[in-house]
Length: 191
Image (tube, rainbow, N blue to C red; front, side, top):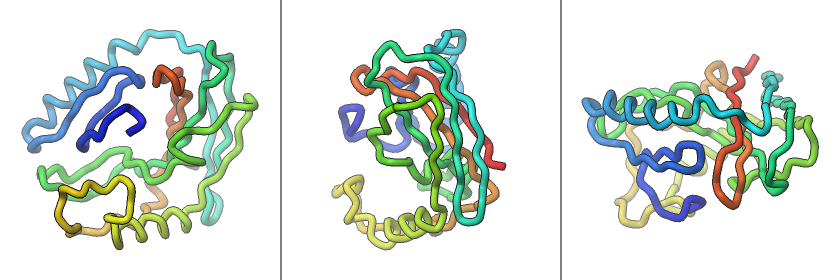
């Protein structure tokens, strides 16, 4: 909805500007990958307004994230998004693809992002709370705003409500909320 539509899964939005609808049977995966790779290559040599660096550390049930921003965005309304991702999830979908990379498990704050008020950001994810949210979602996804009424009742081949806590990473990005353009992003492995 943020990008103006109710798109199918998977739909990739490259740099907040270019939409590519993926999906299909497993034998098309290589073609889709090449299409994504080509779309990404157009943005590889751009100099970002802001450089993001940082680290993420697992401490008990929490993931503590510390980010540093160097530079300034042209648009003062840009926001920061921080996502906890599972680097790989094994789940055989209806298209027979069984490995899913960088599955977003949680967005800090909310989907609108957070206002950037400092060049040093410290946030944390509560892994137990995230797993509770995943369990609640899978117990009855029809109560969620993302549920598509045209689909029948849910039937899970496997429940993916438990995080592999040794397989997590953080992805952070700065985005212009008006143009949807991504200013820069960073991938941080969790120590």
